[in-house]
Length: 524
Image (tube, rainbow, N blue to C red; front, side):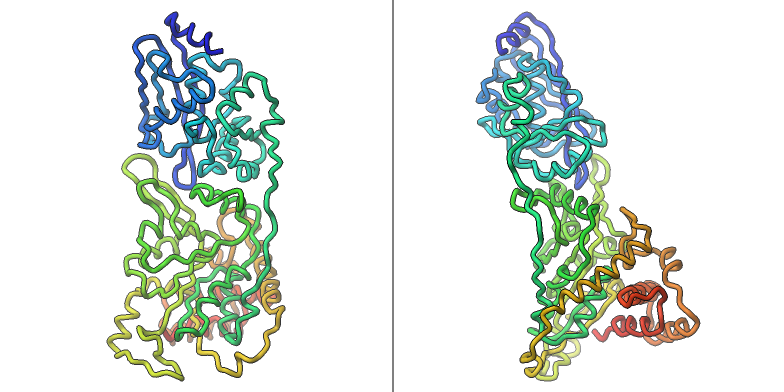
């Protein structure tokens, strides 16, 4: 095998190989063609096509992997030129290692006979020739299937996520040597693919809501927020239960659809947060970043553009505990994602990267710096100026985008001694699931676009939030009394639609609007 390749080079024969792979771009990816030319002359290895630092290090990494896999390393040959097409897009990450190694082996005549033009190659090589898992395999395999590839070679540790994709043959490898044995017919396809792995399934149903004493109004707000995807703000004295209430939100939110599971797993795959232990994201995410978080960490970006906390909370909850301790710049960074449901990050070279950002914002805060303003049991030590400065971090536009405002008061001793209904969480979850089903039926079971009431645009609101004359008169008085903006007005209609869905009613009634107004009339 090796002798034939060396013989061809020594005779001055020019050899060319083209291998396909994929590179991440945010949570999406694009195809890269690795063109490798081996010709006679003094040894020189050139890599062109806007590779980043990690890819440029391939000379030592891939060269050692080829040698330790039993093949002739690149320095045994003449001039080697590797071109990563398209040339105008920057390539990042180490997922091109396998494709580059295969292209060198094919161009040098060491591996021939396999039709690699119908296959894509993804994986990072270690110095001993082993294949290591890389982030973003799921979106890459999806893109390979869309591009018409029949096979994709990936590291064995990426098997779980790649197995989600139908319509393309996924071949798992442990090493470059194993690929060589496969091409030469020394091992069968069945032996390469069958690892005996089992995908972990099943979710624990452990409702924290069952253990929370009192706070019925807050629990009702959680139910409405979970059913319709509405933003929520909890405020009250320290120790009243704001944090534990917010953390129970994902437990009562509707079950994920298959489309949402694929969407979330794709995001977490691109972020490198899936593993053998948690290969598929089956539960709605709950992200609770610290108040010291930076704006790029929240919305995404960095040297290697990756999803931020907002995108990682997609289809789940972004919880900002002690929200007034976050910087004003970070909080204002939430405005567009909350409105548009996506984040667009542009760089000087390459197209803009779009990150999905459909999340439920749950904020929690004390009413003042000392935490006891308005508390019935402990006196507040803050001046009116201190309170105003403390609350000023939450700008008007952010406050206008929050639908449900809930004061979480101190729980009395007698209430703490009462026994809760152990089935309370399950009952609320069932109501939420029924309301979510009504929304799916209403919006035509769309795979993309509107999924819950909070995502309705003006057209959807006009079609699905019709009210009678008495309800309209009541709403007009509420808008005038609380000086609500147009956004807040439409927010009231959305909340009322969710309350009606929870009641199992097709039409929005006056009592639904009255309950919505109670949660919208903030005293914070």
